Amino acid sequence: MNTVHARTARDSIINNSGLLQIDFLRMTSDSIRTLLNADEAEVKAMQQELALLREGSLCISKRGEGFRFNCYDKRSQKTHSITKDSNQIYNLARRAFLENRIKAIQENRRRLSAVLENTEGARHDLLLQKKLGKFAASGLDLSRILFTKEQNEWIDTPYTPNPYHPEDLKYPTSGGIMTRSKSESRIGSKLELIGLPYRFDDLVIIYNERTGERPFRENYFSDFKIPNLAGGITVHEHFGAFQMEKYPDNSLKRLNDYRNFEVRELPSRIVLPEEFTWSLEADLRDPVLFQRIINRMLLPSGL
Image (cartoon, rainbow, N blue to C red; front, side, top):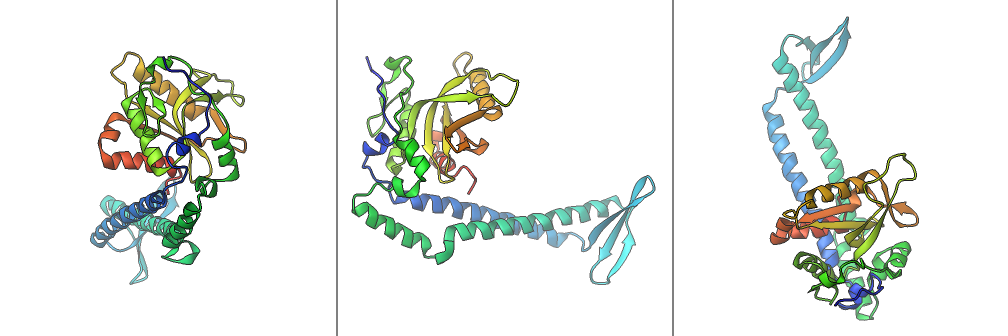
């Protein structure tokens, strides 16, 4: 029978190589480039639609109990009423929405590009990888460099995994951590391949001090917890047994508690809504979806 012993999140990378792989940085950069490419495609589609819409700006003013709708033509610098032309009103409203949406996306692209390129320009990512490569060659644990002091304290804090039904721990990860399913083993092995420290089957405490409501449960055992690039801790659940009775209902209750009450992993902050992630069996069967799951764990802010 398996026995459960206290361990730390750092054990998961010591079991591998003790070093965060350089591919970790490439993967986060690739995630940002994927978002930039998607934004570019969306902007092009909206610009094509704009080209088909009538020129003009929609002006709305109060008129008694109703409203007056006018179209302002920039070229003629004239305004005329379109109150009775509902098609033109909606076309100009659509134009205004698209123009503002494009502006917002372009601003977001500038922000993402700045994150990607940083202050050193386009070669920043390569230079950073070379620098970390030197640290790795010196035998340094790169997770201590990439994560905050508070995150590293969390990584080094001992925890005791779920002690219930240790006989179900049948599936080892590549690093030798025993899990309860083949899917959990795949996720753990993927994190170990990257060199990312994680806790498996660790206690999640639900806090409800600020409300008069009560959660469905006071605590849970989370499948995975990992430090993320936003300076917090990602709590990840893999839902792989929906065929079991009561499993779907219990899963929704868990997610509801995560959403509506506080979960604390670090002293200075609670786990943010975007730091709760989850996966299904289909996600792990598709390499692209599986990679997106890992990216969301690392970049919960959406970067």
